[in-house]
Length: 200
Image (cartoon, rainbow, N blue to C red; front, top):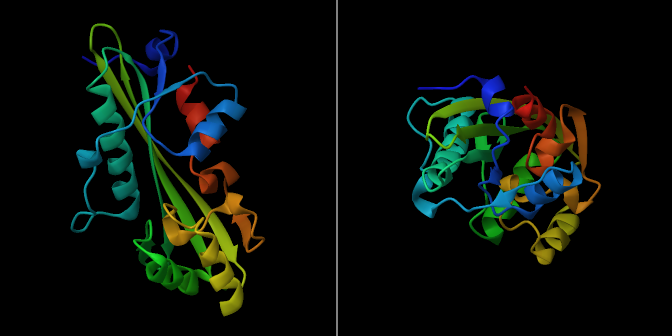
């Protein structure tokens, strides 16, 4: 049996972030939202499936993370989020090494691209009845046509590691301009969407 969104919003369930991202934690803290963190298992998510759209892909990964954590809790509202960078038809996820990061940034520089996040709330009350809500958020950006020297200096810092598209808007490089959409989405958690999903 599934509850309505309003019933869950008034239940005062604990809020749980299914992510190790320090940037997602910071966004929640800055919004004054009380939460705890529980990491999903590494096996919780899998690769993109045949004929799966990018929107379906990020929503599914967000759901898999949140559901994995919710299955280990008696009750709570679990936040799952997954973010990718989309340049044309190419999905750019986390680089595996420096060469992969270089390839991604060379592809992005001088180009308009999108940051796409899937956001999922898995809500479970004490009776273990659940509701699942999913949304997507898209932000359009432009990366400046940086030089090879600037690129290599950035790669030297190592701060590209673990970041979709091999860059972070919060790195203050000055290369990225947001053309349309949410800044918090680019950082890693679309707060406007999350607050709407959490509201009664």
